[in-house]
Length: 276
Ligand SMILES: Nc1ncnc2c1ncn2[C@@H]1O[C@H](COP(=O)(O)OP(=O)(O)OP(=O)(O)O)[C@@H](O)[C@H]1O
Ligand SMILES: [Mg+2]
Image (tube, rainbow, N blue to C red; front, side, top):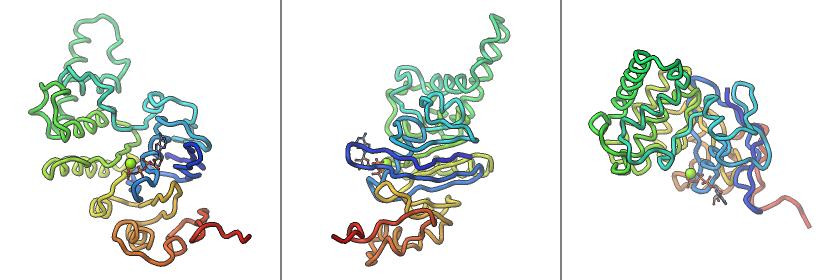
């Protein structure tokens, strides 16, 4: 179980993520939606440790992660897509994925200077790396240097590296953004396969509502950094807050009608409710 408690970050006077409390169960896919600038990526960055929270906590399986670095969080099972800038751009696609598989299995290669053991480890790592490349339809690109890949392939490689780590929690932030029509289904199929696994906790930030509708077991909505809706897809999609954000419907009082969990204090329409 992944949990955030009152997770908050302020940039100067701007509260980009505002006391977001939420739990994410294994075997479920939660879509995180909301307009541009709502705080979705920032929320991910707080969970993965790329940003330090101003307040609040993150727990994974009951263990508090708040003080841990991003790499320490990765080691305990939080999977955030790699930044390709952290890779070895002049090494091949296969070599990079093999290194990620090796990182995930660290220790196996430290059994000592036994040539048979080293060969068999290397062989096993290559086999696993090739399996992963097959799942993202990149076997034909395995020998290319990472630096030479077009954008869509780079995004697929990010997902391949995440697969190599085999984390308990998969965090996808607009995983098909910038992909061509024939590349996006590869990633969506992969997320479908992860869902079938039934053990993974999957968080998906996604603007395409057809994708959300198909994949999500649950939807949460962020708006101005605040969690304003949380529930099953049909209910949340029908809610005014989502209708307004995505379909251009403009109900008079979006917030008051939002499907909201009881603990969320919805902001009053038109500013504060204080009278002067
Ligand atoms: N490092 C930062 N410094 C200052 N402000 C930031 C920083 N990171 C994010 N913000 C601000 O926080 C708010 C939330 O941004 P965020 O990128 O999380 O939105 P988002 O929901 O992911 O949007 P999008 O759908 O466009 O990706 C924005 O107002 C953004 O300008
Ligand atoms: Mg974003």
